[in-house]
Image 1 (cartoon, rainbow, N blue to C red):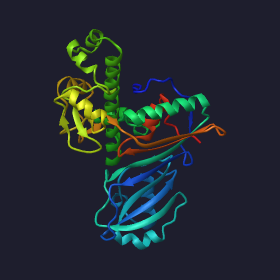
Image 2: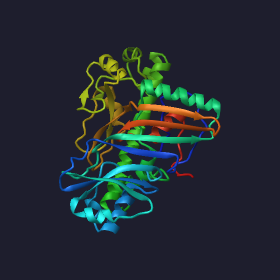
Image 3: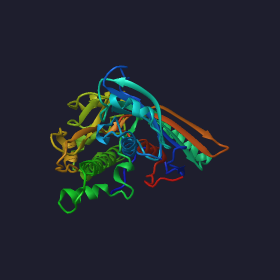
Image 4: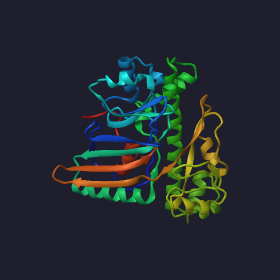
Length: 363
């Protein structure tokens, strides 16, 4: 898997990120509150050292529910302390009252009229504690946070998507080519999702490289390198934002909306700078809208004919409530921020530290 690209230009920051439930926490922000009545139970839980799938399995074993009947809005990192909501048919209310688990605690139970499904959340709040931070690096983190707060950041998939060895997408290719057998529809879908994610990250890295080149080099050099018209490059240079937009890019209103084609790139660039809209990239698959023009040409280089539902994904996000505090006595730096659903805290952290993180959890 190729290395990801970066928006920020500072040198890599030395930091120790321990993915454990004391130094990494996430709290789900609901898309809507439970109504208080209905045939389903919305159960807010806190879990530590347990993945969402493992949590549903634990409930299945202890209260006699099929794991597939438990709803959830998103998957939470196993290594983090996480607060999220699961849904259950109301008939399990008494059994839930007796539920006990050393790593899962029920915080609240409310009734609602529907089952939770993937995507039924607004976003997530994160807390991250970095260790072994020198004072000079703390100032660099301060600066990086300021840049992200002002301009946003690329929306890469995090390393969690690719497995401990980073090769889940290779397993997906072997499965799709008939060279390997993968048991279970859930695992098959998970691995195919990893392939979609790898293709998206590769595409986003190419677009970052192109945006960097447009900002740094002359029109003739960029035109030759990327097979673009020098006149087109000249029209892109005045765009104030880092991620350059082409006519034909598929845009979305931010933080949600329907996709539309950028017909006037300078106009859309101004709206992008105001955080009103953002460009999208493709998740390869069936029935997916493709960008047009040069944007579509680049996109097609990373598209794969995958027998799964395709989609569009924000290429750029605007984190909110960014805060950072350096605790000099402990050489710690504490970060807090909010991200929209689907965005990875670890990917944003990689941008801030300007380095790729290890997928292996640490203590």
